[in-house]
Image 1 (cartoon, rainbow, N blue to C red):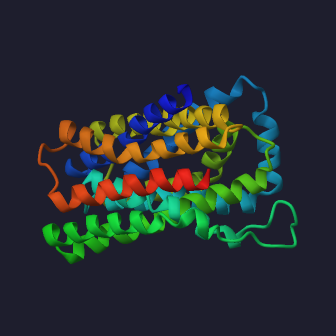
Image 2: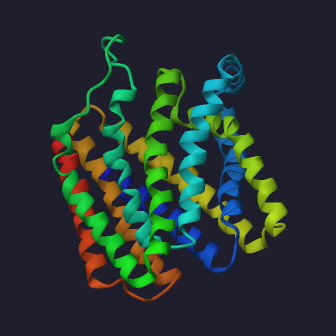
Length: 305
């Protein structure tokens, strides 16, 4: 049960992303600062975590040798993942963003043909349709959430929130899986995250310049909350979740239960939103939608096992 408990705790820290982004948005903070500050704070954090191994110089050497692919896929996996997610926080509540982002669990398998078969590199991977048979339940839940958002906030705001999250949901597994293929097991999770953070720095510095030119320097509250996202979600949640999956990797059923703990992100985001952002409960169709997404995640994880 220890890996499952670690996964549940990781989900609590992951949910901090959506809640703190919502707080920064309601306070009038630029989503550009919310996005870039997280990764600017993550750089020293992961340097501290990885410098003890003494492999950071080797990592930099390898990055220089393949810098184009590092920059491209790190920008996709981190930049096109997190910047749209922050943008969506301006137009939808945290729990709706968290629920819609679970589309990434479907997006990962759908991207399989973009990757080579690990056994025979001449072949492309196939989409695992059987493991996606519960995806319809998740999609129904996401559509129900978005339909309720359209009824409450209007179609224009709903599209402004939903489309960036869809981009984010596909960019996250695409960039990360491309980087895992590039690293080929050479680097630990922390080292790979450090490398991707460094490689995506041009994107974050560009966003910072645009943010400064359009809205000036970020307020202290946005800086501190972005640091919180970097610590809670970028560092603690990632390390806890990877630790849980490492412990469970030899047992497919236990690994499926660990992966199913991702569904708790929606629950924790809703709870924390009610405590820290707004005490207004979602309408009942949104509750049904969130329940369907959670059920779909759990049963798809069991099917993959």
